[in-house]
Length: 192
Image 1 (cartoon, rainbow, N blue to C red):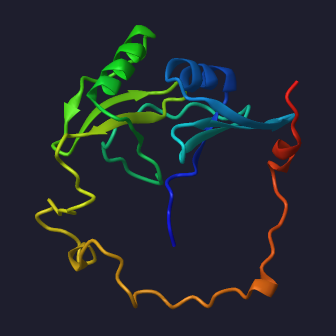
Image 2 (cartoon, rainbow, N blue to C red; image 1 turned 180 degrees about the horizontal axis):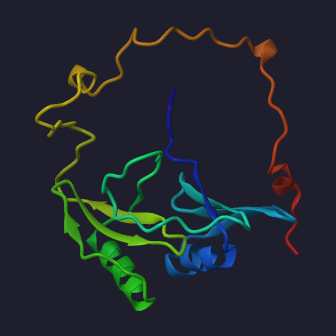
Image 3 (cartoon, rainbow, N blue to C red; image 1 turned 135 degrees about the horizontal axis):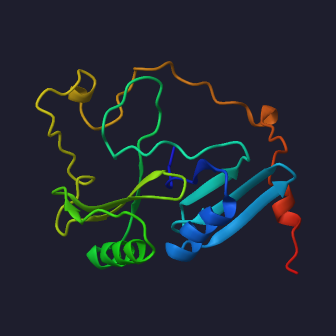
C-alpha cells in the first residue's frame, strides 16, 4: 500500500457560508468541489495537492464546546484537533497575523522541538493547529520515542510488524466492483 496523504477530513458545520469565509477567504484554501441538495451540502477545500478538508452542512448541528488542544476529557470522544502543515515560520506568522486581524483567538508560536506551531479555532470551534518543521529536524527519517514508559506495542519499533493481523486474501479482479455514490454529479458539472 502507498498512502498519499489525507484525501479529506470530513467535519460538520451549521453555517457553510461562515465556514467557507474562514477556510477559503481567511486561510486561502481553494473551494474545489461542492455537493448539495435540499437539507444536504458537502463542500471540499484544498489544503495541498494531496490533502483536503471537507464540511457537511447539517442545519441542526451545533458548534462543539470549545476545548483547548490536547487537554484530556472524559467520556466518549474521538477528535482533539487537526494540525495543518505549512512550509516555514513565515507561513505561521502570516496565518497568526491573519487570524488575529480577523478577531479570532490565536496562540503565540510554540516551539515543540521538532515543529513550530500556532493554535486557534474555526467558526465551528474546531480546534486547529498550523505546524512547520524545525529546520534540521525530521522525526520521519529518524523516528524517536520520547515517552519514558512507552506502551508494549510502541516498544516493538516504528516499522509495521508482520504477523499481528491475519493475511488478507486479494479480491480477484473478476469480483471487483465499484458502486455509484454521492459526488458522481461533479464530473457532469459544466462551468456556467
